[in-house]
Length: 255
Image (cartoon, rainbow, N blue to C red; front, side):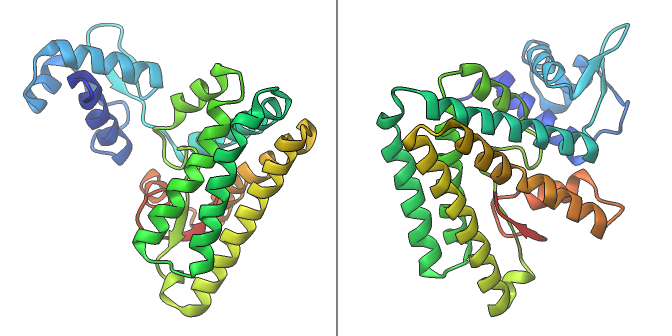
C-alpha cells in the first residue's frame, strides 16, 4: 500500500494538472491539511515530492505556488522520453545479458499480435493491448543496464502522455468499421516496429535498435503536433483525455 503522503501527493498532483488550482495560486500546509483532513506532516512530505516534480515552487515566505504544466511542457517532455527510450534500446542491444530478457519482449509482441488479429477494439481489448505495450517499453527501460534511464523516465511519467507505452484511441473513429480497420492497421504498424527493435536487440545491432526506437517513440511528438494544428486551444485536459486508459474522444494514436 502507498503511504499517506504518496497518496496525498497523487491527489494534489491530479488537482494541479486538472486545473483545480489556478496558475500561481498559493498552497499552504494549513489549507491542504484542512481540505484533505490529514495532519501537516504528510502534507509537508507530499509538497516536497511535488516540488521535486516541478508542479509547485516554494515561496520566499511560507507555502508554495502552483506551477502547472503547459502543453509546451508536455511536448518537450515527450521528446526527452523518446531520446531516453532510444538510448535504452541501444544499451540493451549492447548488453551481454540481453538474451535473458528477450523472451519477455517476444511474449509481449506475440500477445499484441493475437489481440490485433482478433480484430476487437472494445475497452477490455484495448486495456490488454495497453498492458502489453507498456510491458514491452518498460522491460527495455528497466533492463538496459543504466538505472538512470528508467529513473529519469519515471520522474516525468506523472504528466499526460508520458507514461511509458501509453496508447490512445478516438471514440468517434472506433464507432465505424472503417475507423476500426484503420486503428488496427496502426496497431499492426506499431507492433511491426516492436519486432524490428526486438530483432536489432537480439542481434546486438545497437545503432538500428536506437534508430527504430527513436522513430517509434517520437510518434507521440508527431501526434501532439497534429493536435496543435487541429485545435489552437489545446489544453492539458485534452492531453489527459488522449492519454487515458479508456477510449476517449481524441485522435487515435499508438506508441
